[in-house]
Length: 345
Image 1 (cartoon, rainbow, N blue to C red):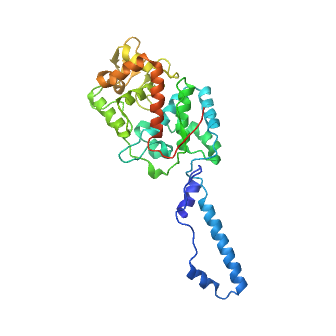
Image 2: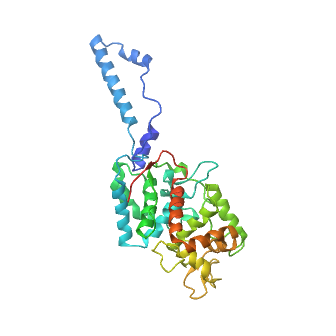
Image 3: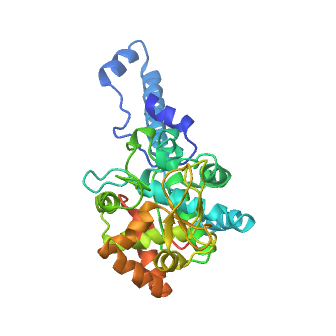
């Protein structure tokens, strides 16, 4: 019980963590403690003791405030509060998508560990992973007041972070992504080791086969195929790289707060050259030098199996939206179980 009590005070969400064994009375001690009582005293003591046991058992069977997925959360209202953040500042949207992506992208199908289900990206131990640079002081911080507002009704961090991702995509002009509730926050021990997220560059500087091998290693580990790797890369239509976070610099598209297939058409149709600067190797568009691509983007053109899907999505925005919605939902649900399909928009 000491462990359970500590969980109640450390975390602020409602949980479904139950005591496995029920409290019980040791009859030897009880008989001993009754010596010297008359019959009425013994009867009163027994009634009082059984009442206490029942009360204690009932208490520990209630969801404690550490972990639970809420059954009474108004997810439509939560989504509206997230949407207001984005309406007030559209630049927050891409970062919220990144938070949902990175909270989910730690999944390993072989060990069935990681993924969005435990909300572990809220802990500094995971936020300190290289791929999560900057998220603690941006997306996680922005969402904390919303979590506090709905914590008593049972909103988990895990549900909040994934809902923030799908809400942001819709608010920025993208498809409505299916979303399910019921993720149960887990303690810090569930944080996975660093290194499960994709790198922007692997092997030699700039794009080469090492980068395509790396992408496949990372995404195949989660259970994705080549088409899904490419369609998820389309999220780079949103946002930009910041030197203070990743070391890289610049937006992928001229409309970094609009979700569309422009990433694919620009990647395919523009000439990309290595950027001449002191930072990590990346590419800029030859015509203006204002847009950028990472080595892990350019390798989608070099690998024939990837390139096939770049061409498909560059031509067909509707297909991109459809495939992205399906694949992003799959990403958000990796490693989870018992979720409830939920209307949120």
